[in-house]
Amino acid sequence: MASPSRRLQTKPVITCFKSVLLIYTFIFWITGVILLAVGIWGKVSLENYFSLLNEKATNVPFVLIGIGTVIILLGTFGCFATCRASAWMLKLYAMFLTLIFLVELVAAIVGFVFRHEIKNSFKNNYEKALKQYNATGDYRSDAVDKIQNTLHCCGVTDYRDWKDTNYYSEKGFPKSCCKLEGCSPQRDADKVNNEGCFIKVMTIIESEMGVVAGISFGVACFQLIGIFLAYCLSRAITNNQYEIV
Image (cartoon, rainbow, N blue to C red):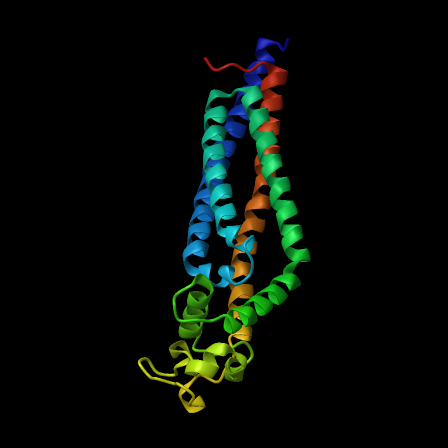
């Protein structure tokens, strides 16, 4: 058992660790809110792009929302554990932080390795969506219309891709290919956007996913600090039998 004088000397050190860990936990909690917001934003803003990748890709925003929620709950638990100065709770907190860090690390590696397959998957599904396009409002056709309206593009590589579709042979170009709102392009190429959508979509996805990847990487690295602080505080409490009076 440590002497009273030794416990007295270590009190400032442990108090300092607690203060720093509380600040860290609050910032960590904020990052959870940010990830939650990014997931919701991705679901709302990038849903059209995800819907043309594959069924698994549409779950990406939900994964971010889930991770953000877990971080918020874990940050709350970490704050409680730090205030209570409970060694076992702090160890559990550090263990959960380590687990989340490993999950994020694996997810980042998988995303990096298969990044080229995302491009190929989108291009193939976009071409398939054009061939099966109809104006009745199925989710793929709706996604094509929204992308073409938003990005002012037409077709995959250019507007001529539509000429190989059944829809074009029956009705001509869809209205989402119009250069101006309210036009009726039919079969007149001079009334439609000439640029294809694939390059524009890939540019947007790469830029937006870069933001998501940057935030996720920052959160993952930030967790290493929390793991270190929680472990050090837990060890200091255990070794010196620190108690809150």
